[in-house]
Length: 326
Image (cartoon, rainbow, N blue to C red; front, side, top):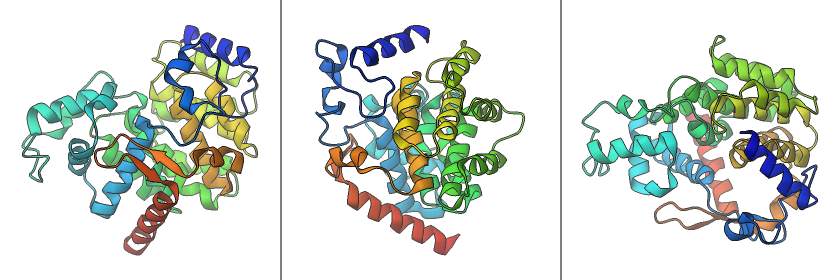
């Protein structure tokens, strides 16, 4: 964990990008040049494919098709229909393997699983961050309904995760549902805690993030607190998300920049913080959105590249449908 953060810090220092307040610049001759050039400042022409955005689009498709009747089995079926196995990792890949071994092809074609789906979440990574990055859209489409948002996120998360691996997504979804009408980020965080068991590790991580808000060394203290956890665990990353949001409630670039520069699961945390901040303020600076040119790339079967305006319209449509039904 320390080595990864140190390498990131060196890169950003060499790029002259600390404190980070914009997209990461390209440094020639580095690994980033070989694998991440298209996502760097000055080279970005669209939102490049990533597992995070895959799952957000999948959640949209699921709610368009299933609405409030969404079941964990529907999530599993959607993975088999749309999600390339090569774009799954840790808990998701373990769950996917079981789906392929036990439930495909009959299950994928509309039948029932034929086995207990709880087997899919019986894996060594079921409290890592994977389900937390799948939770965002459930909050977006349930404004003012944190309980419903958290419940939808749990149904999705249960396919591959358990315990804190489910509590983290429930909190993120509930927070997203609360933020559009919240008087403050702090108040929304306090309210979203109601969707997390008080004695859970997730609740403690959220409280740690709150306690370190405004502390310039807050990210260091959070990483030190969770030294024994994987850099892609739910708890350490959840604490960073809360810390960054509450530290920079008025500065989008600083909130994203600081949580990315903090290390751990940088792409996931940057996306979660950015989405939540935008729900609260409703106006993300154009300098952050213009480089995409309205283009969102995914690696889902039959989709390829999508238009941002269309995704927004579809998301609003689902939110309106849920408001009528809930």
